[in-house]
Image (cartoon, rainbow, N blue to C red; front, side):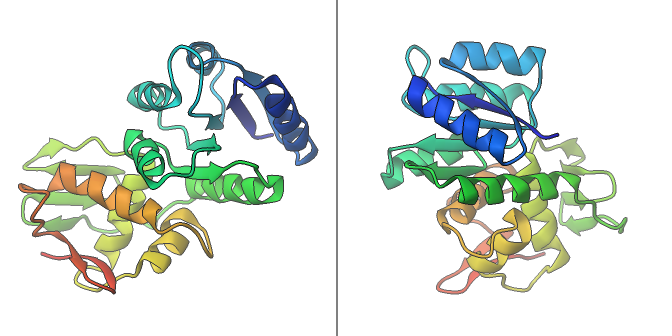
Length: 224
């Protein structure tokens, strides 16, 4: 059974989410603070973590950053804040997805299933893709630059592998949402923010990328 940790300070919302997730077949448990959530995840790791942004004490952004330092667990933000700045900031902190309250439990469950499928998915062993000093190996599950390991999240790795498998070809944001996130539809900002994070790690000048480039109005491509 898939375990889900819910970090939400509103008792009524937390209880409602736990009951709904239980009805969907998840082993769900919740805490009211980021600090307690971090402790629970260290002691009893969940398969997915849901985080509210407006938390007492440590806020959700810092909670996500600290979770991501130690753990590659899929993180979904659950928040009433739907401002683009907040969404982008949460994704840049390390979240994999963002759902605006009030939460439709069927939609949330579908997203959790997609994250779970991504975690189980394996790529057939292939020779490493090489782009100058950048090496992407699906078989080894690693990215190297100039021979040194590049720390990437699971989502960033899948994004790089997808682009590397189609090197030199443009993939639209919707294609990447479907192939990397497993969503038929979704917020394209997910793609844009993760591309930006990847550029910070693989480009000499992320503001003027030479490897992972944008084709205005079309999408992204990884080029040698």
